[in-house]
Image (cartoon, rainbow, N blue to C red):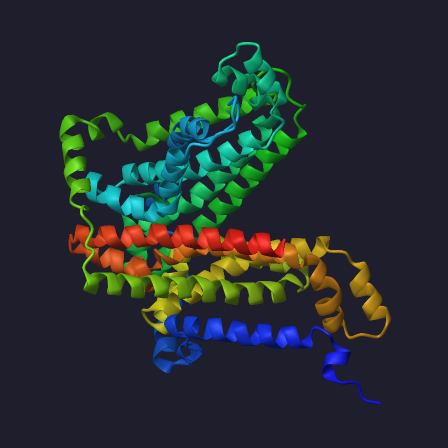
Amino acid sequence: MHLKPAERDPASQPRFYSALLALFILWPLFQAAEVSPGALFDPSNLKVIGSFLSGFLPPERGSEFLGYLGKATLETLAIATAGMALAGLLALPLAYLASAAGREKPTLNPLIRSLLTILRGVPELVWALVFVRVFGLGPAAGVLALGLTYGGMLAKVYAEILESVDAAPARALRLNGASRPLAILYGVIPQVSKELASYTVYRWECAVRASVVMGFVGAGGLGQLMDQAMKMFNGGEAASILITFLLLVFVADLISSGLRRSLDQAPPPSAAPFGPGSTGLLAIFVAAVTASFWFLDIGFGALFTLESASSINQFIGSFFPPDLSAAWLRKVAQGVWETLAISAVGTLFAALAGLLLAQARPRLLFNFIFNALRSVPELVWATITALSVGLGPFAGVLALALHTTGVLGRLYAEALDNAPAAPGRALRLSGVPSGLAFLYGTLPGAAPQLIAYTLYRWEMNIRMAAILGFVGAGGLGQLLYFELSLFHYAQASTVIIAMLLLSIAVDQTSAWLRRRMA
């Protein structure tokens, strides 16, 4: 007796319709992203990329260049640290205003939360590009850009952390006449001091990578040096910079992991506002920030004179009103659709590659591959992929896919290791092939975590896809870079607003999908 397909697998019909729906959604996205695998094997493209990559060896080791490289490395670290200091100064009051912690009535501040959405919704590279136009080339633009974007990110997370703990101690202090700041300081902070510090350290690690990316628009550090080397087709210098950046990211990861472990191992906080282990960390932070500002020698006082303030106001005023003409809105809408396609298809390719590589052995070798892929900034990958397949959105797709494979591959491997092993083992013992045992036994247990990681990464990739066009990889970034280069600020304003709205829409969609799949 032969069973019908539906009797063999009751879920076959829903899977079939799901596959049709996925094809219906993905096909126009693939078209907009101009996916063309054949371009990777085009003889002319292979010749260009082969010639370029052959120039990477040997890496440049000249003493004069190594001196520039050492200074740029220190500048990158200083930009990240100084930018995080400014972000913290901005985040603390904003988190206080946005949070419901310590309030007698748990009300939220929609105005402040909207401001946080704007600050973190505009990519730091866009802020850097704007500040470079105001203050000129150099690290000042990078520090200010990090301060704004990361200030918004830190404030949002700080507010959520403050609201996530037991409110009883703060409420008791308020009932006894304590002001709200004191109630938060003594009733809430002791419960979350480790979590706040741990997240801040993690964000510093991210800021190191971001400071490199901002150098591509003239904000100093290794990125600016890399941009010059790539434009001059100097592969030897580019290789040395890339190796240095990989080592820098590796060291930043080690420092960040070590600091977070020391926070986890510290004794529990007392009734004091901060735990006993916080004094040493605070001293390190103050010393690092002081050294960073001294090394960068920015002189913010000169930046914010009356003359500078007038220049800033005039510059900002040139962005308003934005160009809302029908012809320009159609062009921006096309850029939005292209950016969405780049982010979605790049994330999809990365998810498939990450899932395959997450099961590969030996694990140590593939962990190294994952770290190497994610350590190279997307903008660097985009520069290389643009040489491989030509300018356009497909180069952006490949750049996102390469970087995100490193991120998701590592996360997927950990999620699969933590998934229940019994179902897959039982299927294998029953004679089911290992591939099917993984598909029907192991994967379902890890699927919620894998989906959550993928959606979170898509939220980040939409912001990055919006700026990959700065190196010719299509989307809104290419439109923005072109308009700013021509000093068309009204048109650029419309593009920045579109970036912000697209980022908010993807955040909301991703959150809705995670709730539905939880």
